[in-house]
Image 1 (cartoon, rainbow, N blue to C red):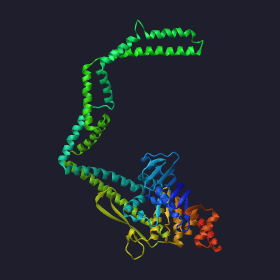
Image 2 (image 1 turned 30 degrees about the horizontal axis):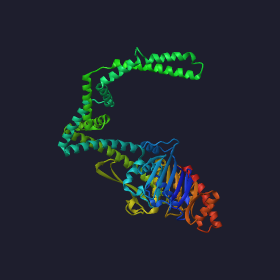
Image 3 (image 1 turned 90 degrees about the horizontal axis):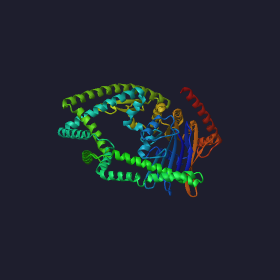
Length: 566
């Protein structure tokens, strides 16, 4: 859920910091006070389209921050893992800066991300519904996904099985089409891959081989210089006439009797010991190197030829041995794929036909499960609509079947609705009014609330165009949804505000000649005053106060009933 929201220099908000809790929270206030600006800010944090128009006049940038508790949101954690983002305390911090130039800087848990990544993560945290936005219900292409979501684990399992089979068919079909399109090009590519794979495999390159070979070549090519230097150094250290090691040893022995008299003498003695034993180690290493040193003209020639081979392969396949090996692995994969389908056109056609038939069979099985889920969804929607005083409305799931296989199956689904008895059912997106759409959306949200997984759901004036008992019914539905997800709701209806667990009032004020938006969390007396204002308008009368108290009491009773029947 959304815990903290911080806004700086956004629209008419100079500086605002809000803390939110679970349950249902309403934002109320006069029209134009800036309620929707707060929702716009959350929308931008969730990856919505930004604009420099949002920046407060005269400000260098607009800054938005939102802290979300994602402890119970597995979808968020899965998405964070996809992008390699970590969370230490089960919280997710979204940040976004908007600049006048149009530049956006987005961060998730302090890590810079692009707006696409921000949107993909934000969609798992926030679900915003507004009266005039293009919602899922208004997009027929989203209806199939909603039906599958309602179908639960049974439909998901069948859809996954179908998609795996469809992917296998698609790959074979692509291979078939590619081969049929240009047999000659296919054969040429196959020959080239076979040559390249054979050439790289025959070379049998090792990752660090080139560096090792270059070192060996340098030693062999400079054999005489190396031998002379090693021998001369060894002779100097072990010279019978004057041996540096013996001289240092004698000096060390001379200093030992007086080393305990003065700390400085002890230091000199220790330094002589270090030099003495160090020279002995050097002499031993020189001797070992001389023993190992050997001249092999044939080996030098072999090393030169090997390095020349690597140079030739680098010209063809990459700038380094690692690049050559990676290219060989990629060529192996492509060659194996082509060889798997290089069994003759007839055999490939047979494979395509078999996988297509298997996909169609799974598609029909999936379609049957969807039809069963559709009947249950229609029944569930009618039950919810009845509670929203749309009992005469008929909701239908219309199926169209395609002969062509698609990634989501063989079904084409669109929601239809009949709002008045005697009329034909028509596509929902074409005939539903704003108020009806709000109620349909709430019906679906109530059905999906427990399984959606989104931590925060925002309703932006979804109760516009309704009143009376319908308003109370909408308030009840939002309250039910708040049992499963945090709900933030902008409303002008006192019935909805009364059902909330927390209420904030948004006011527009002028200070030092600048308009600012202020947000105040209401305690019980302040809530009564705000509800009275919503009921009576500008002049709050004692009767309006009494009605506000009654409305709060009725809301408390209504919430208790809803919890009992949940």
